[in-house]
Image 1: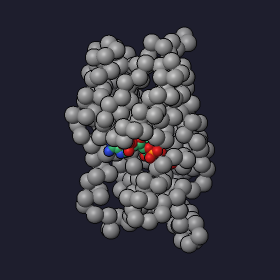
Image 2: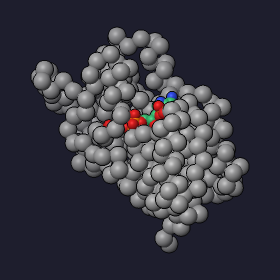
Image 3: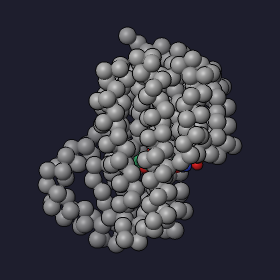
Image 4: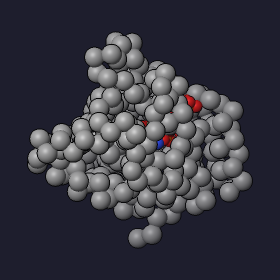
Length: 270
Ligand SMILES: NC(=O)c1ccc[n+]([C@@H]2O[C@H](COP(=O)([O-])OP(=O)(O)OC[C@H]3O[C@@H](n4cnc5c(N)ncnc54)[C@H](OP(=O)(O)O)[C@@H]3O)[C@@H](O)[C@H]2O)c1
């Protein structure tokens, strides 16, 4: 049956830019009701204004995903204001480039708190509402790096693997309640991600290889909502390379270190 988008209520964290903002606008074009959170309210308001211009109902709220109450308030406001919650997209996150032994405890805690705790807060707040409805879809925006780490991105990759583990477990826990859980694994996507990661790392962070637009990733997420499946790999060939890397870790080490030992190629894939 085709999805009646105008009846759907979707919560998105990190909706002020990049993939989160693109998802909001792709859904707004379908007149979906949106509950959007982020910290930069000026940017979030600009996304909301565009979404409203498409005919969507939109509410926005300041939401630092590292703060539990902020996320609970955001997720519950969907139910309180619109009476239901169909989709929760745990998207907020940031990257860091640092060798494992030089990463500070503060850096590690911060990236964990935002990328993992911030995701878990969404999953934990959305689940009871969706179980009660016997319907819903939790979407976790992880990364292609979730299945194979690379030099200098260990802390970031750790958070993306953790998100994947949470999603795999929750999918099996909630399927009998009619609730779907999916993880999304983008390759390099042209967003503010790299500026933010460079600022936090004190050095340049660039993507590597195939680059996609946030709009393309968002359209694939819209299709994922229409047809839920366990994992979405917006650039599917990488999935098969990662399966090979899992089967042959020594070969993967060799190929990855060759890639990263050429100075002109020291870039970070996320
Ligand atoms: N770009 C890529 O190449 C790529 C590849 C794979 C996976 N991803 C993942 O995709 C997701 C979205 O990233 P993006 O590429 O769209 O980057 P982006 O343009 O930098 O967007 C990140 C979003 O997360 C929000 N955010 C960051 N820290 C937050 C916090 N503490 N609390 C609430 N919101 C926070 C930002 O909003 P505020 O700053 O306004 O709060 C922003 O809206 C991330 O989880 C990232 O790991 C990105």
